Length: 129
Image 1 (tube, one colour):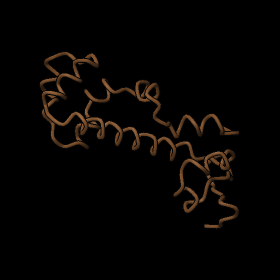
Image 2 (cartoon, one colour):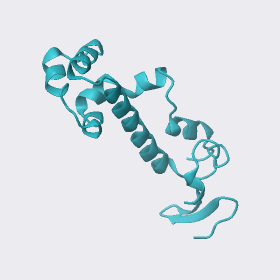
Image 3 (cartoon, rainbow, N blue to C red):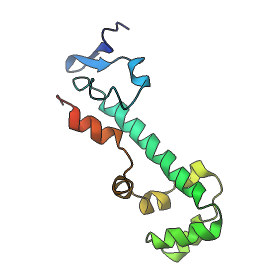
Image 4 (spheres, helix red, strand yellow):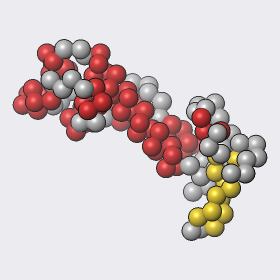
């Protein structure tokens, strides 16, 4: 658990590598550029998946009633049968992880809407593979 300037050393099958220290990763956006030499792609991928799921849950919550959900799902290209089948889910977390919502509110649509992708930013700044 050695920490120096927000970094720690890790040991893997490829040898020793630099990673961001656990305490340093509690802040997200501001420090991402500082840790361009650290290996943390899997962590960024998990965070990105979690964030997109939360965004989908929030969108589902905004649609409020089943009628609005069904209408919006159909506007996003989901066939009527599946829109009716999935439109009445009340649990936001379950709806956010559903195949219908992942297919209608895709990662590309979220990116076009301006939602920040931690993984994309990390990959653009990462110096080593």
